[in-house]
Amino acid sequence: MINKFEQYKLNSIGTMTKGELLLTLYDEAIKKLTHAKILMENKDFNIARVNLKKCRDIFNHLLYTLNNDYDIAKELGDLYRFFNSELIKAEVQNSVEIIDGILPLVKELRDTWEKADKIAKSDVRVIQQETK
Picture: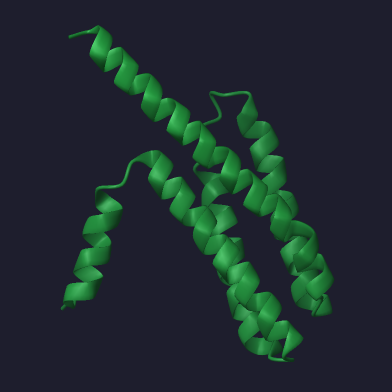
């Protein structure tokens, strides 16, 4: 049986727009990367690996759900594969430096998607107003 908190989370995810869901995935990846970095700095490599694996799962999900009808999908796919490759290196080498190298890129990509989502939402509102 699902507890009330789990039910709330499922309902929240079910009502998100695609943009909101994408941002949530990026936020979670950033959180896992940051947590893994802190854990590595404190020599807790086993738990750090768990966080890096979860982060790779997020990028794999993003990779496999790309819409290849758009030209940008190839570049995003390459970027997600690069992130995963770096995460594997960070895991094998217990390297905070590798995490430090990709964390700003993930944050920048997340911020770019946030701007794109805001533009898309404002465009929808303009179209809705024009059709009234």
